[in-house]
Amino acid sequence: MWLNTEQRKINMTNYKELGLVNSKELFQKAIKGGYAIPAFNFNNLEQLQAIIGACVETKSPVILQVSSGARKYANQTLLRYLAQGAVEYAKELGYAIPIVLHLDHGDTFELCKSCIEFGFSSVMIDGSHYPYDKNVELTRQVVEYAHKYNVTVEGELGVLAGIEDEVSSAVTHYTKPAEVEDFVKKTGVDSLAISIGTSHGANKFKPEQCTRSADGVLIPPPLRFDILEEVEKRIPGFPIVLHGASSVPADLVKIINSNGGKLKDAVGIPEDQLRKAAASAVCKVNIDSDGRLAMTAAIRKTMADNPAEFDPRKYLGPARDALKVLYKHKVTNVLGSAGKA
Ligand code: G3H
Ligand code: 13P
Ligand code: ZN
Image 1 (cartoon, rainbow, N blue to C red):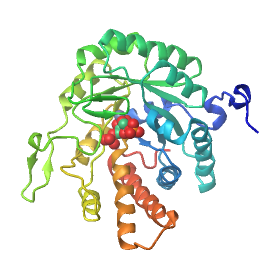
Image 2 (image 1 turned 135 degrees about the horizontal axis):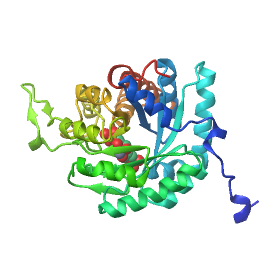
Image 3 (image 1 turned 90 degrees about the vertical axis):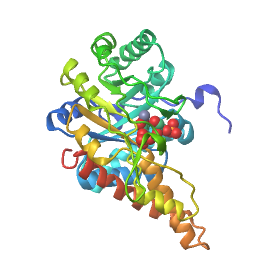
């Protein structure tokens, strides 16, 4: 039976009904405690199982992050129930960790509004590519709507190089510390993403921007901690977000390339720099590419080792296991959020 438009509508829901939390309290605790909350992107069941499994086992709070591309890929209705399922799954595993459902790089007011209606507890409005005044206006519009429902909002100042879903830039524009106070005051945002030299994807730097170690490994330029410190001075205690924070582990790139992959000059942010950032006012760290690499490496290897295998569970299962190992490592050894739930 085909349904009419009215019958096809799914009921609006508030995130609290799904058992989710917003990010406000988590960020305050993270700043005081000198650690950062992991924001892991997901599009599918295996990623979600790995994220929740890893964060329950390590007792870490977590931000489940969905880009607009992920929302189109996975379907907004399924996502809502997956997020609700994640809350229940954590309980079933034995420990009820705080879970935030966050829109990553929202690019319009309408998208943010729709996500809030579908149960997101946090949204990012990314107006960073617009002129300053337009960024302020758009961000304030989203904040005014979101705060009516107790949904937290992340804004962005400064532009990261790389592809951010609908938004992409070939070059980095560092955040101007002189703008942050005014931006936070005028928009009312709850957290601010800044640009201090990270970028999106697995090729964060061109080889000519890097130096090479004796064994040929590319070493990227250090992050601009001077900008971060200046930002912290101007908005003390305000939650700062770091995008583009994958480390692009060399062992994963090697597994991919020795099993038919072709990743050239892949380079990420060294983990010691992320540890340093997590101990500061940076209280949310976004990681997507490292998860993609871990999954791809496991799938390529399993397929190469077992060419007769055609049951998807036989390669998605090892991919899920590899993801879980990666996420546990991040929360325990890089972000410091283990044991904070
Ligand atoms: O910042 C970008 C995230 O890694 C999401 O990527 O737009 O391909 O889902 P995506
Ligand atoms: P990476 O590409 O470094 O994983 O960054 C992800 C991100 O910033 C999502 O918003
Ligand atoms: Zn991002």
